[in-house]
Image 1: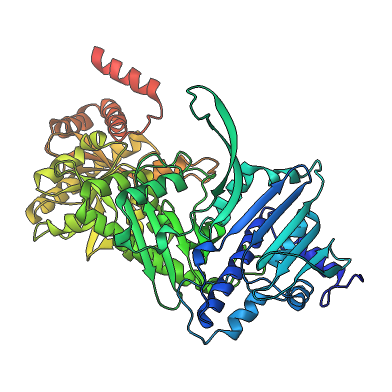
Image 2: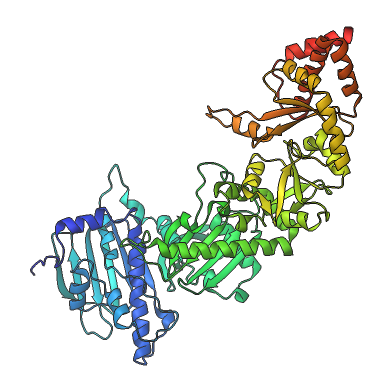
Length: 630
């Protein structure tokens, strides 16, 4: 028997196929099972064309590990191959019988449940990553004889007649010896084989069987066990996402989610979609209720599991989800993907972008529906992942305002409950053209801000911004339904009447000398000192001028390794109606030194109310004590 050489490619090409195309050696089992599935689909299609009596439930893949002889056998009872087909399909690298089958029958109507997976004709050769020698015994459906193809790699192959019962193909891998770098014996372990089938081929529509050992009670005994070997089916076969939604119960969705994505709570929302269009796909997505322990760390990997015809291509395809929806878990399955030669990544990301865009719209609409139908559940989701949505507004520089602005929520001064921006605007006063907000560490601390008292007294609702990203996101959002946002702690908030504004303007003009003296006494930390009428009972408050608010200053300067510190233009505002204003005017005329001390104390007091540190607490303490003993 003469050894034949591979027809189309050189040893260098085969070496590349074995060592470079596939990222993980374990992929070989996926490829062999997919080929077996193709062979059974071809037989089923052939039976339909020729009106043959074929019970599809009799078709299966069988895996046989043999630890003693270091062989792994993958067999199927599909359509099989003739000697010529063995030569053409296995003797020619990159020759795909499945691809030819698709082309030959491309225009012919095929049943929906016939899906040919292979197309490049290289998956089989991935088995050489783990094998020194491969034997393929195959008998074509309806043929009288079988043939055996044998190869040890690039040196060539042999084909010879042999005996075999029934049609199908038996692939026997003679595994490589273990090395320090790789344990090839792991592919003979029952647990590892189960894991790989479940990971990559769980939804192959034909049963994948293997003889498995397990312990059970001996018949008639209450405490004596025995080890038995029974044939088990390793795969689920029918993907839950390819079933009709009305065929799947809530418990089945929940159990699938918990098992697949390792969560102990049921999902807040299930999104089951079958989409048609430029790229057809099925998707089963889940909105979790809680934050994974590593979600807000660099170690978290976003992405959906990507399948093609029920075969997993990528465990986490990050391109399918935008960062602001990175908390979504799930699966996408499409027959229209153009895969690369290793079936581990896509050739054309345009297809992926179309799916991603469609998914984004679907997730957005389903979150809005959840908000409407189950407000409490949505708030649970938002408390867990709302920060990421707000970062989405900020990081996209406003490009995703339309997608995210109606999903974000803030606690409100109205009953201290979460409200959406639409809800806030919907109950604004007719004369109100501004959405008011205030920043602070907590709702309680914001309520202590002097500015909130007067705003609430005017009947205006305040949004509480308690996360670092909040004000940055709102600055990017800029407006909502034509209403501008305004920080109540900035200089440009003025709720007084025209008469009150005019009176205050005169007071600041006549008191300019005093106010300038107080500013100079406080020092470099402050831009200006002014009288104000927006404080009801509080003596002083801090406001800012320009784009940087006090809260933004705190956030930016707290960023690790940020060497460029920013400084807000701080204004000390003194309540024009408070007795302290009269006291300061009197001291300015009679005792400027004491007026200067009062100014420093008032400034320190205002900083503490804002949650800011005092530059010189010793000086503050001495001044307070000095005034107390005078």
